[in-house]
Each structure stands twice: as structure tokens, then as C-alpha cells.
Length: 265
Image (cartoon, rainbow, N blue to C red; front, side, top):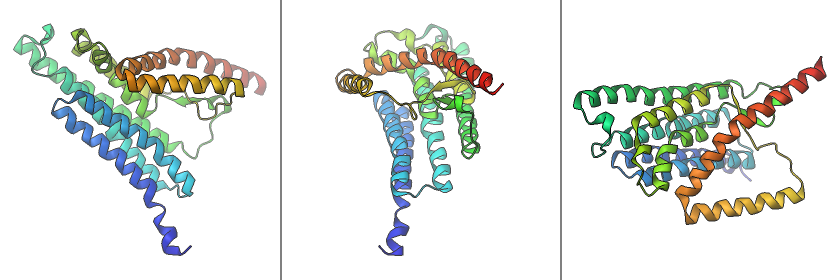
């Protein structure tokens, strides 16, 4: 294998990252045209390619700081800007008849305030990614092994869009999900969770028995079948499960931390 061939290898993971970025930017375009389902789909595809770029880099043994920085920039657009912009346009759609926005004077003020929540999510996502990059070479205490510090950017973007997912799951029949107040709550919550140090679920280092792996495979097949058959309902269930997992993770994190500190003391 020649040096020229070896030098080509770093292109592949970066190309995967650029593809994720392209989907994130395309989601913004779909949001602008009111294609809500496609906007979510493109963000989901950005998440898939965001997952694959690291795998490709490790497989080819070409991980680099440049790739890590490029990945963070892609994540910021795809999961910090695109979902918040989607929620803004969806909730503030001129065709939407929401009582709080029927008065033009109130509508003008509400739009200005709501845009602040959009900026908040984007800034929190940027802070989360900056902290993640700064801690890459820092060894964390062992009780962090099964947890992320805060909500990862892709999960944060998903939480941001949950009201829209719920709305689509109900065949667009429950307009309450489109309330700017509910959307603002989710924007605030997802932003805080991304920027926080609250422990959340991480399955990277999870070791399970052969019996449990069979059960996990069955669950995974069920989820895949559900996503293909009734995607919005399944995504809603995944979102609810993830929200419920947060207090569970906090409980076990505090338990593991207490045991670790006791063993050290």
C-alpha cells in the first residue's frame, strides 16, 4: 500500500461527517418550506451519519483532532440549530390558530420572546459540545462509566422536537402540542439538559449476558418494525422512555458515586 493510498483514508470519516452536516442544513430548508416530517427525517439521518463517522474513523484508524472539531461543528448545526429553528417555524406558522397568538400585539411580543428560547437551545448545545471536546483527554471517575455528562447533542435535538413528534403521532389532531408555551418548555428543558452535568443514559460500556442480549435483540427488532410501520408513535414512545430514564440514571449515578467514595474513604 502506497503513502498516497494511506493519505486518502482520513477523507472517508470526514466525508461521513460532512454528509451529516448536509442533512442538518437541509432540515433547516425543509423547515422553511413547512415540510415538518422531512425536516425531522433529515435530522434523524444527520444523527445516523453522526454515529457512523466515529465508527469509520476508528475502523480505519484515522481519528484526528480535526475530525473531532468537524464533528462538533456538524452537531451544533444538526442538533443545536436545526431542531430549534424547526420548532420556531412550526409553532409560529401563520396558519396556526393559537389563542395566545390571535391578538397581533401579543403575537409580536410572543414571537420575540420565543426566538430567545431558540437562541438558548443553540447556545446550550454549543456549550455542551465545547465541554465535551475539552474533556476528551480527561479521565473521568469510574462512576461516570455508564453515563453521559448531560444530554448528548443528538438526544438534545430529539427532545427539542418532541412536541412536534407527539403532534404527528396524533395525526395532527391535537393542536395543544403546537402551543408556543409547551414548545418553549421543551426548548428550555433540552437546552438545560445539554449544558448541564446531569448524568444520562450511556450504553457504550454496557455488558450483558447472552440471555439478555437475545431479549435486547428482540426489543431492537420490535423498535425497528415500529419505526417502519408507525414511526411517529414509536418515536413518541422512545422519547417518553428517554425522559423517564433520566431520573433513573440520576438515582443509580448517585448510588455508584456513593459506593465509590465509600470504597476510597
